[in-house]
Figure 1: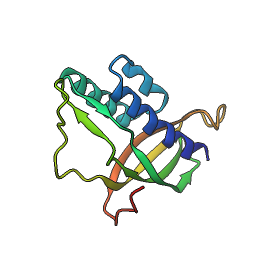
Figure 2: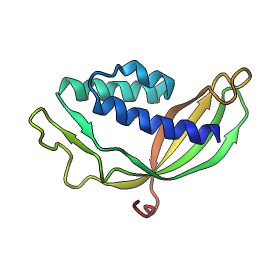
Figure 3: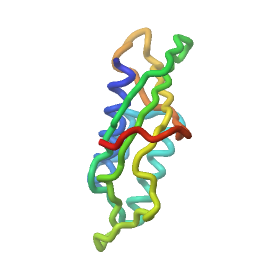
Figure 4: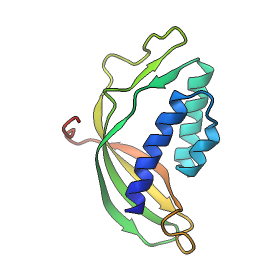
Length: 141
């Protein structure tokens, strides 16, 4: 449950920092780590440098914990079906920069780690990586 909740918080936080240019990139530190944190911060930096911002929220259609490893760090693989059909990225003039052939619904397998499992089993979960899955899209929400 905690890993699934962390994934939901990750998507909500990523949406918020991409929508509000006043929010600091450090808000991502509480929901991401490792290569995912670096990738999200770089994307946000480039987006803001280009005068871009997001409108709309990513919808999570399905969140499935596929496996959990109790090795150190504790790691869960979580498959997420997302829908970005309500999400747009706008330039400074309010024009969309989203490619017309963008995939609006798809699956991603996220690696979610908890480096503080021994002391904070529910609170230390962070999305540390991910890759898109080549599988049939789930039904859009």
